[in-house]
Image (cartoon, rainbow over all chains, first blue to last red; front, side, top):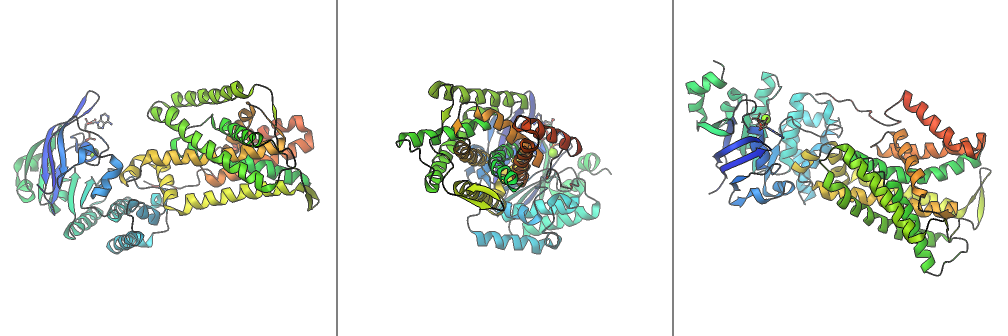
Length: 236
Length: 297
Ligand SMILES: Nc1ncnc2c1ncn2[C@@H]1O[C@H](COP(=O)(O)OP(=O)(O)O)[C@@H](O)[C@H]1O
Ligand SMILES: [Mg+2]
């Protein structure tokens, strides 16, 4: 099976049972969104996919590769790149250096240069601020930097954890447009959001996660009209 | 006057070398590595053993011999540093800060008393001295070997600054100091880079050990204790975790000491420099170059 297949995974933090037999799939070329409230297990799922936490049960495969057995720092070499919750940019390093770090595992220096340039083309604001320290950017710019940094790694599967968090609606819209654009250029996207409205606008399919397992799933357009989703996540 | 400054800069340059290791390790894993001074001591002993096993030449040091000795000591202490991190610190990476600190103190005693066990408690005369030809520099007398050693120290610092600021691996080092988890997501092998930091920091301390042995003329198993404290002081003066801060702090401390002994007498040297430190820190607790960063969330 091509794409990402998460099958029956459990994750425990000590006595906290964060993921309970969680299963979902992301086909190549899709944008799939995981929706859920605070504490549902979205970040845990992302950390699991990028190797930062390990499952006690279940399997994760990406285009046939078992991701669960790889050390976290090798995942980028398999095209799995994680943009973490809270951006986590390197705040005292320049915008340019942050982008260069995205290419740490790319052996071909000219390819890194090319991708950094592509990130600047996609997000010209980053180019304007390339010599500024990352920590001096606005929230939206920091999110763009975090995405740009991930793009330099050359993702085939891009994991985005709440990119809209703390951003004004207009900026959320810009960030979502960038994500859609990245997807159109061929990158598979797993988008975790509490902001269901923004996510469902660009996602093809979505899963609703509650206390560590999937309670609803379907095409984004259908979920956006589902009364249970409307009531719980779209605040109508 | 210029003699005082020159002596201060010379002693300061090896304080700086030791402070760099202190500061780099603190920067990357927030550990005050109390065993760092003892790595310097072991560097001095490696130089001692190497020289004596080659027939103990006691004549005035030739510069190439010294540089060779420094290289041998650097490789040995570098590997020692990697071993210390692997055995003593890495298993405690996620433990409370205090546990690691106590382990560092334990490691310090381990190194000190292991050397005492092997070489005995009494000081050893260093088989090589910084004499040889001397020359006049702005009215100060320096030996050429002394100048050469300062040159080596400066060179090491320039190379280090280039490595940390301009290379891919240096960038990874700075990234880990800021956010190890985000660095992992970039594909950086955090443990590998930390090991490299220990290698570099310990190698610099080893180099300083040989230089100190040749300068002071005698070494003993406790020589790292006070100098460890001083290097720590230098790192704090400069702003701990900051590379240039450590260099600047080391030179500053060397100068303070030099002026302290010239004005108040040798026995007041440490009182003077530590009093300056306390005074300084009460006005600028982040050190000369510490925390000049604006952050916005
Ligand atoms: N490091 C951790 N240690 C213990 N519990 C954790 C940890 N991280 C998350 N949890 C718990 O796991 C559950 C899922 O958290 P998380 O994945 O962060 O949710 P979300 O990202 O959907 O808000 C929550 O109950 C949270 O308290
Ligand atoms: Mg979360």
